[in-house]
Image 1 (cartoon, rainbow, N blue to C red):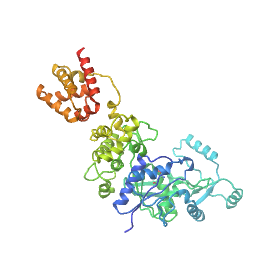
Image 2: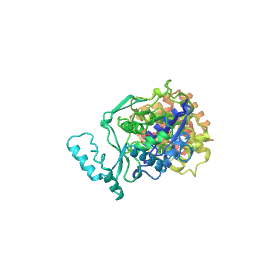
Image 3: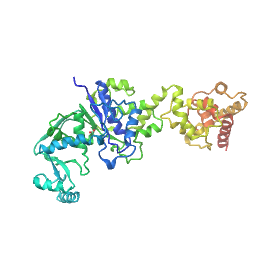
Length: 487
Ligand code: GLU
């Protein structure tokens, strides 16, 4: 059986985006599920749009996610390389010449200005999809040669023929077909002598023995153009799967201009998300396993992958779900790994020079169960580093709207002041004592204590929180709450 060969073919016009990463990941899962090869090909022929760090960001972040690349610019297979399109120009030229010689392509000398005028006139006349008028399709051979001798600027276009159906069985969408009348004599070689995407992709997918091309749905309209080239070059096209779009919460397609949401993998990496969790999350954007499980390791996902379960409707990018998945993975980390994830953020945000490492270890440890991503530790631990004034609200007023809560925090403050050794165990003991002496338990016990000690209704383990806040700060906090409600 033919070995599966799948490729992710990013243009280095930006950093690795959520959408690109999802496409890469589905290609990767498919390849690995069938013990095939996963290839990354850099499609850098749109020179003006390439950015300096685009290629680095793509490769580095795919690898960070745990996606091993079997063949790419720095892992070469002599049979299939090079893997950067700008290094394959000679290869493309060979096939462009073949298309010209066989009469399936022609040189077009129309200037961009003239083409624009024609296009605008067509739009004015109500033509919805303006087309090239094929002015140069049947130029006299002598004229062409004369122009070439004068180095006249030109492009090369493919010859499209009328009334042909281009159809394929899309592995996401089922049967899709286009009539060739809707396709232009499109450009395959630009005037700067660089081939267009539609030409490069066909030649590369063929020469690289690609079996399935999985990509975003924005490429559906390119597929008939590619099928035209496949047929003119007498090659078999790969299978196609066009993944559905990813939307934000409002149902709008994710746009790089939308600043309300991080969209690049490096942003998540910089905020302390775990690669295993991001991998797990992205894999579920547009696909889900038959058992509907949400938490799956890479190995699980490779095993469970099933192309029949690629989603047919748009996927919503749900940051809350990503945070939840990340928190599941964070909970499972060994403390040392968890510490490496969180401590650098803490150090960057706060001056820890007055605290012992036992103190900061305990501080980060109490948040391991609830932390969604590494950087969140900074916000969560704010109360330990910044002085705040007590602020009441109706819920807090409700808690202190009785004498027993007031008595409780008074006794608690006395107890803390009298503690000889400031330790988590002694604080726990004191809380137990008060529970017995005052016969209160549960919420009625913990809520007033937590609010009085930390000014907050929620937080991690109370005794540890109090210990970390220090006797001085907790006593001060309780005093201000007492003063507030004694007024
Ligand atoms: N270079 C194209 C892109 O970045 C890839 C399209 C394809 O996979 O064929 O969208």
